[in-house]
Length: 118
Image 1 (cartoon, rainbow, N blue to C red):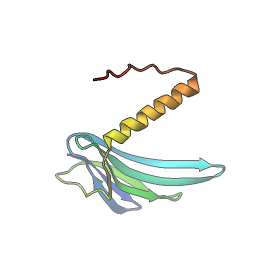
Image 2: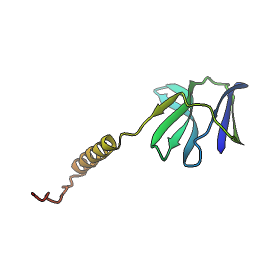
Image 3: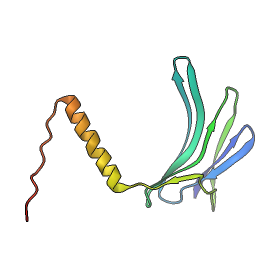
Image 4: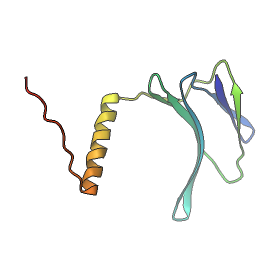
């Protein structure tokens, strides 16, 4: 499988891999807030068949830190430190809530089909 071998300041942090079906990401973030900020790196992804979000690394950084990400072929990967399963019913509920909120914001009216009574 394709995997990310990640080193921070010369220290191996993880080998992250999601197998044959999913998304693997590594992101360096700088979030500025009125001159202050949050600087961190995340390595994670989505294991598509299960719908699970996984995270290997979420580490704060400082100016001068060095991140080495090597794309490798690996037979195995490290176990993610965090794994969150998707609740499909909750996801649909949140999507509907978002659509209603946006419709209200845009002045739209949502029309739905009446449910048939049995």
